[in-house]
Amino acid sequence: MAGRRKQGETKDLMDLVATLPWWGGVALAVVGYLVLHQFAVLPTPSAQPGQMAGFAGRTLLATFAYFFQYFFPLMCLLGALVSFLKRRKRAGLVDQVTQGKGPEMLNGMSWREFELLVGEAFRLQGYAVREQGGSGADGGVDLVLQKDRETYLVQCKQWKAFKVSVQTVRELYGVMAAQGAAGGFVITSGRFTSEAVEWAEGRNIELMDGDQLFALIQQAKASRTGEPTHAATAEPACPVCQHAMVRRKAGKGANAGAQFWGCSQFPACRGTR
Image (cartoon, rainbow, N blue to C red):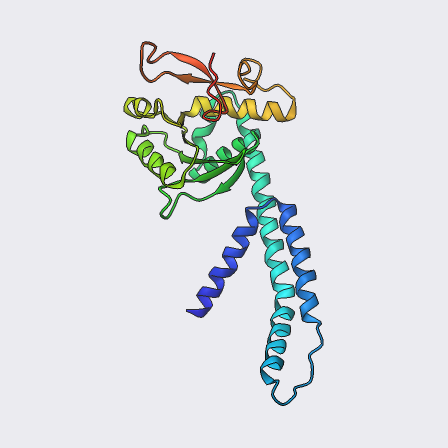
């Protein structure tokens, strides 16, 4: 049991470092080594009568530091390597999609690749992204976004054959309320039921289907690189914040079913055209 626990703690450390940029993991490895090395080379005083507790404590600290001055940086470097490889894979997925001719490029991805792609799309828009994995007591939240001191929750659904139901949207809304999130996104490579679209209307939840995600990725990459992509020149800028706009569909009201331009920064910005 102790061996399993230690392996779990080691993996947790690597996973935590892997959420940082790769250079952050390298920097943490260097700082960790320098700090622990200072304790590892501290001279151990001779044992004196009545001071055995202090002697034992210093000896234990030096032994601990001697071991971890190598172990901790190694875990950080491995985590940095994982971060670097993930970053390359995310960039490759974005290139794969933006070089395609339409959102059907999303359908051939695994759920994990889809989640990485969505996270990278938000990174390109300036969000800090933390990957959750969609398991545990977080209501299926896959990504946690941070921008302008606000938190947004994202649930990804790589469903090609099924429409995302209103139950999924309600569950995310409940988690948003519990965690005090400013908004949320449910993103799918497929489509949403009409009930889901109607229920999300007027709440700080954006439903994004495959067409809208494809347009968002095109715009996000174009805004960062300055190079036009297949769909980059067709979308206007938001009249409120000047960010890229994406196609959306009205869920209810007099214009139900009609398409319109909505700001890609929704719900932070509600500009439309």
